[in-house]
Image (cartoon, rainbow, N blue to C red):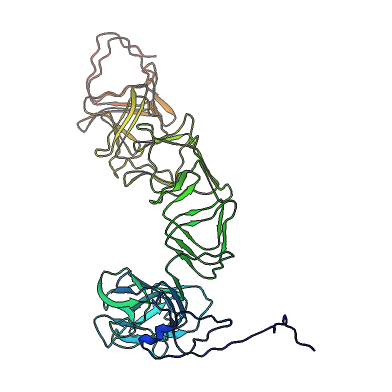
Length: 497
């Protein structure tokens, strides 16, 4: 086939091996054009002024060294790191005791999400592994003797200390961190110094103009503004996004966490830096909770759980379903009912679940009239009306019941000295012994005083025994014999029939 000037081979591979002594003469290479690739796997590449560096799996553009002084941590303080891609060894240790030091296992890049580990002292802090790591606070140990905690290059980790004593830190040796890795700490003392040159696999100290798409599989951290114009949006972020500046967009969709100092909708600040929310209306859970800014009304489909509810308008109290709660009092509506298992006054149960009342005193009062007063201290009771009752029993055995000086006891009535018993009729059982016309009707009649029986009259025989004198001012008619043991004196005629 004839040669043609326009035929170009489809693939050229140029491998250029360059080396020069580490002297100032190396700077004589003013410019180099390579149509292929430059293999620098055998060493590092640094441009003339150090602004571009390809070193240890990192590309740095305009990068400078950063000093790093990391405080050790105790009780609830935190350390956070991102493992550089070049790092092969990392240790943890106690700041105060050089013997308390152990390695992490460092693995290749892993696609798992970043992790938070909780750190506490071993039961014997001076024995390996010195500190215990777990996924939850005081949870199952992830490391032990001969079993180290696994960390992965390119992943970020936060270590949270859950106890005190033996300040915890991370580095390349005891109280040293020469890894070039940046370590953040919320501690405030026992610092370990170091410097970070390779904080991230790609570092650009300037502006990066990306004409196409920027795809971030892990975390996206920004220290400035991110502006998304028009109808475009920041969407489908697979991991957490941390933005220290402002995000402006018509819509934002993220499957992770959106962290900002404040959130605006248009010109309105809806979530402030102090976590205050200002919305026209608020809907939570598909209308499960609705709040309206124009009326101040709120509706809940579930249960409102709250410790304290205070009145909004002074001296108005709080009304719940027609029941007014005000100044510690409960006022039910007209013809309403208050229902409870027990009713207490302070800590004292005044009405029990079985409807028993236990009161200090009792007053029944209506329209200014006090009908009943009962006193718990004395047991006395005052009643202005009528006591209607079927049975009254004595409280103290063998004492009977006294009513206005009249003792009622064991079926008997005992009036007081010089007292009177008044009735229309007096009965013994069903027999009327003294009628309403003061007539007496007895089976027998005995008149007795001081042990002396002066008169005995027997209803069955009609006989009468009289120990004294009988005075008859009118006629005396005898229908049978008269027996006398003494004299008989008569002032009139005695007739016998």
